[in-house]
Amino acid sequence: MATKEYIIAPSILSADFSRLGDEVHSVLEAGADWVHFDVMDNHYVPNLTIGPMVCQSLRDCGITAPIDVHLMVEPVDELIKSFSKAGATYITFHPEASNDIDKSLSLIRDGGCKAGLVLNPDIPIDVLDGYLEKLDMILLMSVFPGFGGQKFIDSVLEKVTEIRSIINDKELETRLEIDGGIKLENIREVADAGADTFVSGSAIFGQPDYSEIIQKMRDSLEA
Ligand code: DX5
Ligand code: ZN
Image 1 (spheres, rainbow, N blue to C red):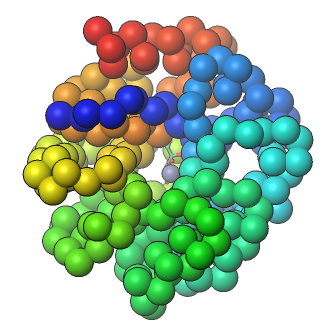
Image 2: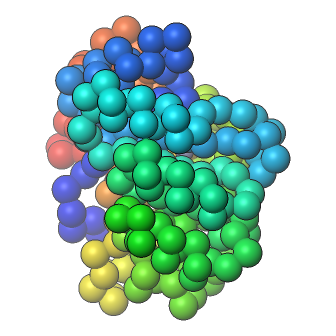
């Protein structure tokens, strides 16, 4: 079971990009904890989004909340360096997109950021062997990355439970984040499986009232 506070991290992939600064301010004022920042390169995933300049712009316009940069890019090292300079708080990457996972994790730490690995739904958890103690966060994808608004893949719940028990057994401080298809109707079930950090894009930005949906998610988590 999660022993830490729950974090809600709206994915700005589903925000209105023509008003991105306002959207991010609004969702944080509405009670979000972090900003989840999806970086896609049209190579590792078949979509293209935003880069370090946009992260820096959010910092420059007064966003002080943690920015959780999810790299869906290959290779990763140059963007790790750029994002750490651009104000990222967490940087996570997919292990198969790195030539040298230890080196990429060190680059994140050297840049003053917290580091995490991301596992796609079909990647087994033994990929984490040898890295667990070096991670501030494990991000489990509950959809195949590339697009917002996809359906949660239920079989990932087993993986959440397995990783939660490893984290607890080893008494690690690692956050366990889940990303893809999280909404009011399933957030509690995913928390019960052991996740403590919840990315949610379309289910938050698709609502007219961000405060109302975030409060409902929190009520569901804490009920
Ligand atoms: C998927 C991204 C997710 C996505 C989540 O590739 O990593 O962060 O934006 O969006 P929803 O919550 O709509 O599934
Ligand atoms: Zn993401």
